[in-house]
Amino acid sequence: MDSSPSTTLLASLVILMALVSPIAALPPSLGVGEQAGALLAWRATLGGQSQHALRSWGNTSTLCSWRGVRCGTRRRPVITGIHLRGTRLAGTLESLDFAALRDLTSLDLSRNRLAGTIPPSIAALGELHALQLQGNQISGSIPPSLANLTKLHLLMLHDNQISGEIPGQIGELGTLVSLDLSGNRLVGSIPCEIGHLNHLVTLDLSDNKLSGPVSFCPVNNSTVILENLNRLSLSRNNLAAPISKDIVNLFSLQHLDMSQNNFSGSIPGGIGDLNKLTFLHLSDNQLSGQIPPEIGKLARLKQLNLSANHLEGYIPTSIGNLTRLATLNLSANELIRPIPKEIRNLVNLECLGLGQNKLTGSIPNSLGNLTRLTTLDLHDNQLSGNIPGELGYLVNLEELNIYNNTLSGSIPSSLGNLTKLTTLYLCYNQLSGSIPQEIGNLRNLVWLTLSSNKLSGSLPSGLCSGAGYKISPLITTCWLDPCQQAC
Ligand SMILES: *[C@@H]1O[C@H](CO)[C@@H](O)[C@H](O)[C@H]1NC(C)=O
Ligand SMILES: *[C@@H]1O[C@H](CO)[C@@H](O)[C@H](O)[C@H]1NC(C)=O
Ligand SMILES: *[C@@H]1O[C@H](CO)[C@@H](O)[C@H](O)[C@H]1NC(C)=O
Ligand SMILES: *[C@@H]1O[C@H](CO)[C@@H](O)[C@H](O)[C@H]1NC(C)=O
Ligand SMILES: *[C@@H]1O[C@H](CO)[C@@H](O)[C@H](O)[C@H]1NC(C)=O
Ligand SMILES: *[C@@H]1O[C@H](CO)[C@@H](O)[C@H](O)[C@H]1NC(C)=O
Ligand SMILES: *[C@@H]1O[C@H](CO)[C@@H](O)[C@H](O)[C@H]1NC(C)=O
Ligand SMILES: *[C@@H]1O[C@H](CO)[C@@H](O)[C@H](O)[C@H]1NC(C)=O
Ligand SMILES: *[C@@H]1O[C@H](CO)[C@@H](O)[C@H](O)[C@H]1NC(C)=O
Ligand SMILES: *[C@@H]1O[C@H](CO)[C@@H](O)[C@H](O)[C@H]1NC(C)=O
Ligand SMILES: *[C@@H]1O[C@H](CO)[C@@H](O)[C@H](O)[C@H]1NC(C)=O
Image (cartoon, rainbow, N blue to C red):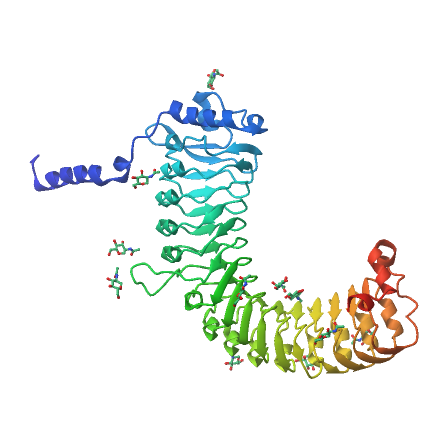
C-alpha cells in the first residue's frame, strides 16, 4: 500500500518541486546583523542632517522598525524595502554594501542630496522591482550592470546629472513598466534595444542631450514593438531625422511629446492611426510639408501643438473633427488660406494659436461660439475684414492678440464685454473710427496696444483706473503702447 504509484508520484513531485522552486533557488538570506551592519556603515558616511534623520537606526533587534526600513520574512527577517524619499540625506551610494541587501524589492532614495555615481555593484539587487533615485545630484553614467536587475518594473533616475550614453543593456530589463531618465545629461542616440521592453507603459527621456534618429528594434523579429507604451516623451533633446514608422506604429500611445528637437521631414499621415492619442506635441522642430488630413482621425485629442515648424499649405478641414481639443497651437508656421470654418466645431477649445502664419481671409464670426476660449492668438497673419462683434461672446477670454494683420473697420464695442481680458493687442492693422467707451470697462486689462492704426479720438475715461492700475507696474503700457517699442 505504502508504495502505491500515486505515493511514489507524489514523492517525486515533491523532490522535483524542491529542485525547481524559486525559493530553493535563491541564495540564503543574510543575517539580521549583516543587513543592519550594511545600513549603519552607510549611515556613518552620510553628512548634513542625515545622522539626525536616521537617528532611529541603531538597535539591531528592532531593525524592522528603523525609519524607512520595511521587512519581509523568509526564514528570518529580511529587509525588502528602503523608503527614504525627501529625508535630506547627503552622501553617496558608493559606500552602500548592496550585496548585504540582496533581498530588497524596493529602494526609494528619491529627492535627497545624494551625489556620486550609481555603483555597478547595485547589480547585486537581483530581486529589485522598484528603483527610485530621482531628484538627487547623481552623476556619472548608467552602469551596464543595471541589466542584472531583471525583475525591475520601475526605474526612475530623472532629475539628476547623469551623463554618458544610455547602455543598450537596458533592453534586457524585460519586465520594465516605467522608465524615466528625464532631466539628466545623457548624450548619444536612444538605444534601439529599448524596443525590447514589451511591458513598457511610460518612457520619459526628455530634457537630455540625446541626438540622432529614433528607432526601436523588435525582439525576435516580432512585428509589434512597445505594444503597451502609453506615454512617450522625448522633448527637449537634439533628436533629428524624420518621424519614423517606429513611432507611428506605437498604437497604444495616449501621450506623445517630441517637441523642441530637430525632427525634420513631413508629419506622416499614419499618425492618424494612433487613435488613442490625447496629447500630441511636435512643436519647435524642423517639420515641413502639409498637416496631414488624417490628423482628423485623432478623435480623442485634447492638446495639439505643432507650432514653430515649417509647416505649409492650408489647415485641413478635418481639424473640425477634433471636438475634444482644448489646445490647438499651429503658430509660427507657413500656413496659408483662410481659417477653415470647421473650427467652429471645436467647442472645447481654451487656447487657439494661429499666429505667425500667412493666413488670409477674415476672422470667422463663428469663433464667437467657442466660449471656453481664454487665449485667441491670430497675430502676424494677413487677415482682413472687420473684427467680428461676435468675439464679444467669448466671456472667458484673457488674451486677444490680433496685431499685425490688415483688419479694418472699427473696434466692436462688444469687446467691452470681455471683462477677464488682461491683454488686448490690436496694433499694426487698419482699424479706424474712435475707440469705443466700453473698452473702459475692461478693469483687468494690463496690456493694451492700439498704435499703428487709423484710430481717432481719445482713450476711454475708465481705462487705467482698474485694479491693475494701482498694483501693476505693467500698466504703464496703457500709455506707452509697447507696439511702439516691441513691434
Ligand atoms: C533593543 O531593543 C530591544 C527590544 O525592543 C530592547 O529589549 C533592548 O533593550 C534594546 N537595546 C538597546 C541597547 O537599546
Ligand atoms: C550579474 O548577473 C550575472 C549572472 O546573472 C552574474 O554573473 C554577475 O556577477 C552579476 N553582476 C553583478 C555585478 O552582480
Ligand atoms: C529574424 O529574421 C531573420 C531574417 O528574416 C532570420 O535570419 C532570423 O533567424 C530571425 N530571428 C529570429 C529570432 O527569429
Ligand atoms: C527570443 O527568442 C529566443 C530564442 O528563440 C528565446 O529564448 C527568447 O525567450 C525570445 N525572447 C522573447 C522576448 O520572446
Ligand atoms: C538640425 O538639423 C539641420 C538639418 O536638418 C541641421 O542643419 C542643424 O545643424 C541641426 N541643428 C541642431 C541643433 O542639431
Ligand atoms: C506649444 O509649443 C511651444 C513651443 O515648443 C511652447 O512654447 C508652448 O508652450 C506649447 N504649448 C502650448 C499650449 O502652446
Ligand atoms: C471627420 O468626420 C466626418 C464626419 O463627421 C467624417 O466623414 C470624416 O471622415 C472625418 N474625417 C477624418 C479625417 O477623420
Ligand atoms: C503657441 O506656441 C508658441 C511657440 O511656438 C508660443 O509662443 C505661444 O505662446 C503658443 N500659443 C498658445 C496660444 O499657447
Ligand atoms: C453658434 O452655434 C449655433 C448653433 O450651432 C448657431 O445657430 C449660431 O449661429 C452660432 N453662432 C455663431 C456666432 O457662429
Ligand atoms: C455685451 O453686453 C451687452 C450688455 O452689456 C449686451 O447687450 C450685448 O448683447 C453683449 N454683446 C455680446 C456680443 O456679447
Ligand atoms: C508683421 O508680420 C510680417 C510678416 O507677416 C513681419 O515681416 C513684420 O515684421 C511684422 N511686423 C511687425 C510690426 O511685427
